[in-house]
Image (tube, rainbow, N blue to C red; front, side):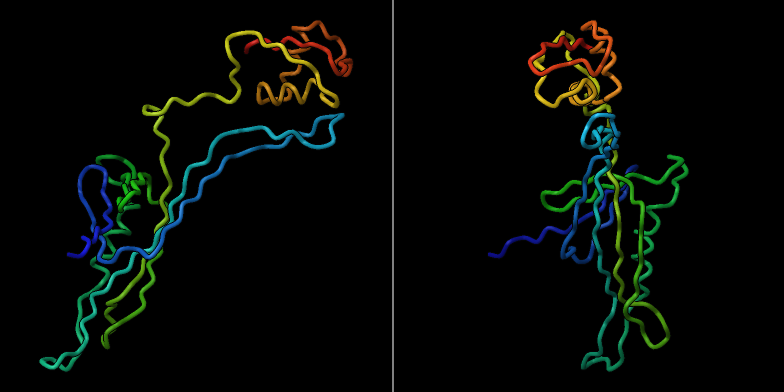
Length: 215
């Protein structure tokens, strides 16, 4: 008894499903985060400052085929207009009246359940009948994930615990670099200086004990 083949499906917000004819041969996911760099006087290089996480991108290609080759009973080729199927994908980037935006779409196949907006659709028609009717196509689709703040608690990278920390200054460290590491912003060195009564930010030495107050 062979294994059951699971077909990929697009589940459309508000109702509706599009089941693909052929499962994709591959898909790829791309994630990342956004940093900015700040040049701080006295440091050998810039400080990397976390800004935000980027959305995850899913790229996948769908194939469609309505071509019917000649047979012993019928010596002419046939098929139906494949745009009937590709149009269903292309319509997912159109604004839906009741939502006042394009619908969210879930790509569901096996272990992947990716929900987001379709931001790009590229239709490539590769085979035609003698009258010009397209009967074979591939459609490249790009999804972008949606961050659901109601389901995930996001912790700001600039928050510090609600307690004062103590830290020992290491060789080569400056208030700017400590502030960047502890608070995510080099400019917060003033908070450390004020807490420790430091008038000159350059006047710190290895081994010095600093209080790091909560923000």
